[in-house]
Structure formats: structure tokens, C-alpha cells
Length: 266
Image (cartoon, rainbow, N blue to C red; front, side, top):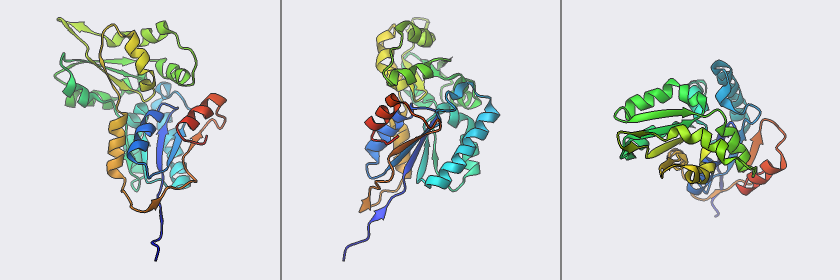
């Protein structure tokens, strides 16, 4: 007698734009048996300039619909700005759902630095969060941590990912404040505290005045999600998932091509 096949619930990955694809890529490697829904709130992008209460209400409203429509196994919030603001509210509003968040990788940076000089490259929203300051106080009080809030880098990353030309001078202006020299020591770790930024890591390395470790949290986020998602033998990978939803409702050709490159229907 043939055992019945089991159809698994999908994993939902949420971001303000397409930067969360860095997390999706790692999650796919660790959870090959799962299907994925990628949700990009591109109509609300970028989140860094939003008023906090309005952004909270928007994200909670989006998740009320997402959980009703797709019933995912787990939700990965692949956005530092969103999770540091509304992570606790999401867990309170939807206690039946498991949320995996993205926060600045300050703890591992503090553990790895040799010079004691660490920078956090983030959006202005992430930089101003009490959550970020608490991470520094809890895990990096022995370090000199510089917070660098870029107004423009997330937009640049979106353009860069789609294949547009980005000016070296413009990028350098956004990352220049990350590099600190103090008492003969230099910054040796820069935390990429926006999931968009790892797509530009090679460009950052080329423009950096000296070599540093650019810390990308995507793999750690994916590992955390894997630990919370049960592995089921004899499961069937559903073919009705593995797609992307964009709140603009009108992805351009470059975005569609990008999503297809990550195995998603847009």
C-alpha cells in the first residue's frame, strides 16, 4: 500500500522590496523540500522614511491578509527596518504564527572584531530604533560602534540589482562614514543591516579604503528558519507556490526577470 503524500505549507519571505531575495536564496538551500512565497511591499518602499505608527499599521494590515490568503508554515521578515519596528506587534497580533526576524548582526560583529571598531550600515529607520541601541548595549558595549544611516543606498541597491548603472562616487558617499581610524586601529567589520546591501557587496569591497569583513546575516536568518520548520519525509513539493507578490501589482520586465532567476513567478 502506497503511503499518502504530504503537501507542505509554504515559507513566506517578506521585505519592503527585492533585497530579501538574499535571504530567500539561503533559505532555499537549507529547505529544499519547501516552497516559497516572496512578498515585496514595493508600493511602500522604502520603509526608512515612514512615520512609525503608520508603518506599523500598514505591515500588520498586510500580514492579516497574507496569513489568511496563504497560511504559511513560517514567516521570515527579511527587513531590518520592519522587524525592529513591528516584530513584537506581529507576534502579539498573530500568536499562532512563527515569525523569524532580521536584526542588525551586532552580536556576531562584536564577537569577531579584532580592532574593536565596528560600523553598522543601515537605513535611517533602523539606525534610530531603540532596538538597535539595545543590541549595542547588550552585546557590543566593549566596542566602538558607529551607526551609519543611509538615505539613498536601498534605492541604489534596487537599481543595481535590476542592472542599472550606479555611480561609484554616489555609493562611496553613502559608505564613507563607515570607515573609522582611531588610535592606530581601523574599522574591521561593517554590518550590512539592510537585506538589500549584500547585493552590492562586491562594489563595496572595491570602493573600500581598506579591507573589512562585510557581515551579511542572510545565512544566519535562514538557519534560524530551518530550525523552526519541521522536516517531513515523503513530502511533495507543491507546484502552486514559488511565486512573488508585489504590492505595486505591476512589476517591470527587469523585476520579472530577476524573480525568475530566483525561481519565482512574479
